[in-house]
Length: 215
Image (cartoon, rainbow, N blue to C red; front, top):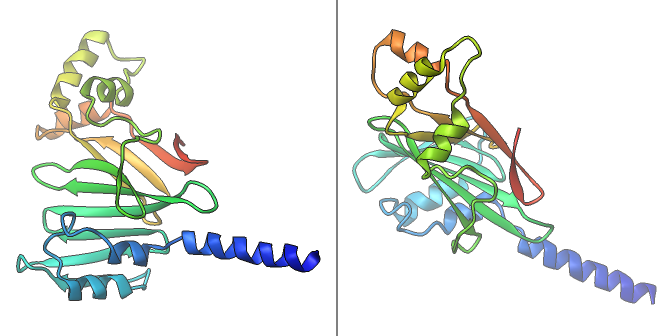
């Protein structure tokens, strides 16, 4: 009986190990439509790069450089070119299942991000997992601005107009642990930027028990 239990335990462990993956495997299987100008040789070179304290640049098919900036077992940041970057984070749902959180950021004229979730087979998931809906301008404006006690309501509403249209930047920290959201301030004078900064809040979220929670 003990032998059967032992064998069953080993079998379950094997299933769990097989179900889990790492960032190397994810990079190897990124669909071409996500990074279409990275050829197979460059993709292989990127996937084999494991130095957390260094960076790696490879030539892409647009005659530019694609650079790995940060990576560990479950996170990678890739500067696709001078104007866009990609962050990929593996998130555990349970002992056997993980999902991918992908943050793509366009850097010009101001950084603006989009966030998508995928299965580890790169099937897109229609779920926000507790993150703010960055496509909902009214919700972002309400959730990421705050009137200081010393500011009049009139002044507050005036300053809010300076951050329209709303452009949201999102990015993981260097270890890929916390995902922070910020509102961009459009180009204006230095003094006005400082005034607008006074009403903007950043928010950070960490993954816990299958959802992102504000931290």
